Length: 284
Ligand code: NDP
Image (cartoon, rainbow, N blue to C red):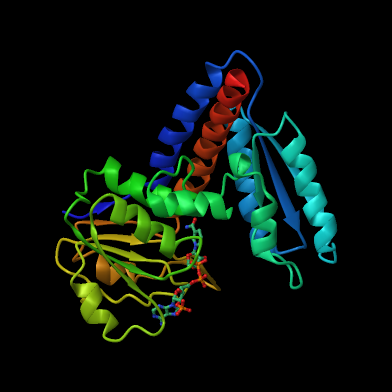
């Protein structure tokens, strides 16, 4: 019997754990500030979801809207002001940025302690070393799905299709730190179906609708579909779900799989950042 993951249910569990942690706080309330530059429609949908989830978990959320023609110096000085503000514990600059704004310069500007998306080089370095206290939301959400369904990671053969900075690479690192044997595939990979077929844990983070065919899946594999492709028929993943479900032991649907986890992990990262910042302030 294949387990089809209910990402919404799992996300609600994590969000209520965050709400409990927030409820136990006696001092300030954790605050997340989301900065959005320009008018990207998909980004606005994501941000609405993120803010609603924050409020439901008892976190304060604020949105800063900047026009697409904002100069990089202006964006950086807004970030520096948020870094200095003791009421702010998490800063997220929604990607993608409009052309002309350097996402790496933006990532470097965010105080690493408030970098809830784990994009600052210091946090990326910690991730590589295996001692990150804040992990990239989507990658951490995938690990959470595997853990909460008792999918063994240690010693497993994991294949990650996609090597982006925000999903594929961090996920490969998290799996490696959990002692999986990890293969990372990308657009130049040869024999992709054959490599995919070797995976006990197969993760697709590509952005190509239904690219992963049923025949690419090893019998009994755990299949995690990170892809979110907006087609006329609606949101579809990178995996051909109907074909894959017959072979996988566990699979995430799109929508309703990984997506809700990403937001839940953002809330968790915000409370983690809050606790670290407050504890550093107490011991200063
Ligand atoms: P990117 O476009 O940054 O990266 C895509 C990766 O896929 C690249 O490494 C690229 O290879 C690889 N790729 C492209 N074509 C092929 C191919 N034919 N065969 C093998 N590999 C290929 O995307 P993201 O990582 O940002 O996002 C991936 C997907 O995940 C998207 O659908 C996105 O919407 C979704 N997503 C979902 C989230 C969620 O919460 N569920 C969060 C973030 C993203 P190369 O490096 O060689 O170009």
